[in-house]
Image 1 (spheres, rainbow, N blue to C red):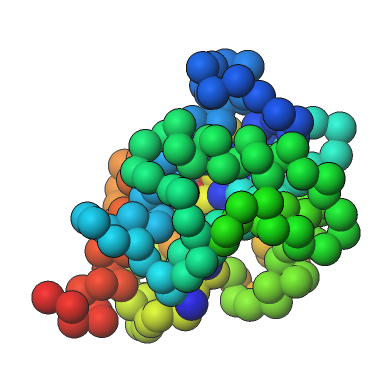
Image 2: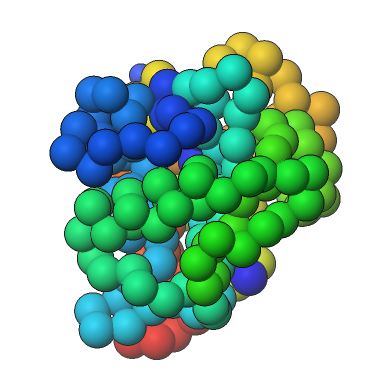
Length: 196
Ligand SMILES: C[S@@+](CC[C@H](N)C(=O)[O-])C[C@H]1O[C@@H](n2cnc3c(N)ncnc32)[C@H](O)[C@@H]1O
């Protein structure tokens, strides 16, 4: 299972307009692009992928999960992913996962809660990390990746990572958008899984 956590520091936690994803919805566009980069192949979905969005732009953070094995009604455009996130936020979030639409679930919780639940070694994506091509098993099919939004990660969030088993990895020498990093990560794993 390949799992991706993306932290949206400004992303709203209540229903929002699909007409202003970057503005009023708090850079929800970034999260939507990450969902698409993580889940979509051409004319298919990656069924061995789960995406966790952490929405921190409200009074209490929300977690939204997309499960590639079960997701329905998702097409590869930002508004489609946004509409499923919006439906998830319209659902009453609890302390456990509640499905809002097939393959999409919502829960109350923050970064530390989610890492505790997944309880897996973390691969934290950062520009100054170790080159992914120098890491043995970087192409393994079982990973938990953590990426930031336009703000990166806060010091507190980095400290949460440092308190758990982790590695800090770079996909290249230049600062990239989070969704582009996800595409590059998939490419590394696809190649080592010898689909080509
Ligand atoms: C737009 S960047 C964040 C920029 C932010 N100003 C910062 O300094 O962290 C979004 C996320 O993509 C990931 N990222 C960007 N470039 C990367 C690279 N070359 N290697 C690994 N991860 C990268 C990081 O997780 C980062 O938090």
